[in-house]
Image 1 (cartoon, rainbow, N blue to C red):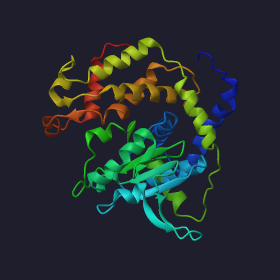
Image 2 (spheres, rainbow, N blue to C red):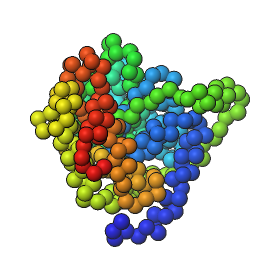
Image 3 (cartoon, one colour):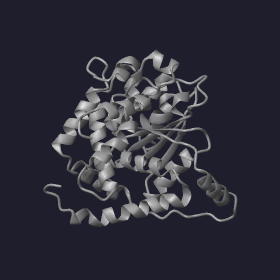
Length: 330
């Protein structure tokens, strides 16, 4: 890493393993998902969590907020939810000393460090779109005025992959705003046994605070300064371009992908690789960082052809084939 006083960040970096331990007090297993959520936070983005009910998605986010002493709000998305329920609304107030009336903006739950958008695909597009400016610009515009959101600011949205009736799939433009698309799987037999033992007794673990908002901002600044070799940046660029059917050399991409990933995918992959390097205690990106993160970075940025669904081919299978056939040094 160039021109960086690593000693200034050393104490923060030494606390990262403690953060994982505190989360592990409550969350059994799901180590990959936990790391990917932390990567999202350090990279300054937002993530989409997908998993069947009962996999502790909400508990994971709540535990994360407790371990980092961040303001946490949960928004339960429903078909009747309106944009004002998320962003806030103006109410008519009266100045008792003068008798004058004025509109006062009451901030909604979006004004938090960590926002859980639970079952985001169950609310109509109008309400989903209310999140777009907040996710990209870190601000809310209401009645012509700008209101800055807290820093750090992270939206973690969840969706259930099973029940799709009555849901509103997120449009491609909004999916692209999510840095990572994280999939949660079932726990192993041993992990599930531990969950049953932990959650059905009288004992309850307390989560200790490891970081605060200021610490997270410092780690986010450090993340952007992590070194990545130009050859790896070139490899990432080529990989993203190979996801586009009109440019790709892969027959799998040409057959199953309708639209490939845009430049934001490359930006996301570089930032996430840098964040993983920090979490692993390194100040330089290695090829493994890219290989492990290419799936959550790209799976929601590929628009699949209808024949892919008909033949049971998902985005992950296409990405795996791209990695196999790519002669780009990663």
